[in-house]
Image (tube, rainbow, N blue to C red):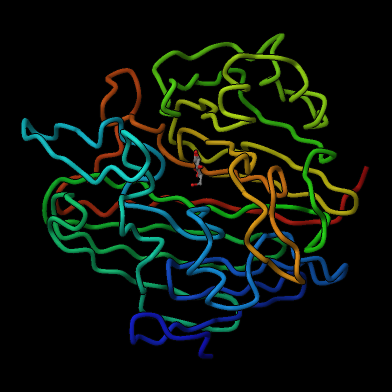
Amino acid sequence: MRFGMNQNQEVEKIQIENEYIKAEIMTLGATLLSFVEKESGIDVVLGFENLDGYLNQHGSYLGACVGRCANRIKGGHFVLNGKEYHVPLNDGFNSLHGGNCGFSSRLFEIEEQDPNHVVLKLNSEEDDEGYPGNLCLRVCYRLEGRCLYFEFVGESDQDTIFNITNHSYFNLDGALSKSILDHELQINSDRVALIDESGCTTENVIQVENTGFDFRELKKIRNQLNISHPNIESARGYDHNYVFENLEYKTMAILKGEKLMLEISSDLPGMHVYSGNFLDGECCGKQGNFYGDKNGICFECQYYPNAINYDRFIKPILRKGEIQTHRICYRLAKREN
Ligand code: BGC
């Protein structure tokens, strides 16, 4: 179904559905537009009623798939196979979410579609936003029971960076809720990386114990945010990468709202938690809700931000000819306790 026009190109909206879940996706940015638990009728992601909303959203990347490199690359500079690369600085001194024209603003084509899955494809050419290699990306959305799976499959004709994630903002209390502060959150990691003054993740990994970053057990977000920490203050909330270290598939976090719960799993080594600190209250979202600070929370499963420049972290490199697949799952269910 047609969702609107962007730069003379038609943007399509696709619906996938099963017994428990209904989701809508658009071909621009392979964006998740809605994610509904059918029995309660609650849509748990922030978004806009029409395409214009997405085109004028003040850099918040609502629901989009971001890449080639999710989050920041310090100074927009990295070295791969001895060669220096410079990618666009679109976030002060850093390159954020793939640059000025990252994958979130690109039109994908529909490659496969049936009632409960869709595969979207994007060919990103050599030197696209300064990155090496012709990269072919497939994003597969698939429903299985209460799970919405994302599969990111990449193949390139040269070594390149491959770090894609989904940038949905969750609010489990539905489209009119103004805040996630009363949600409860559990994050299955005991370590988080601090950020520098530019917001870029550093190699300084701390233990979460006795800090506001500690979500090893289910805790109310509001209470943890009230525990003072200079890095939480400088970010105006959470904008930090939790460290998981390996590429095994695991459950990374659980979020609970009034009636629903969400479980986030992936095979990626990090999870960047962003509590919507820069939502500015000026964009009119679903049902007339103007999204402000802490209206939604993102769980961006990805390689560690700026990992390409750090030797102690796993680097997000896709080798020439290799086919790399990463998987994220959002499981949405009724809250049991
Ligand atoms: C970043 C934030 C940024 C947000 C929206 C997040 O992934 O970590 O710093 O403000 O995306 O642009």
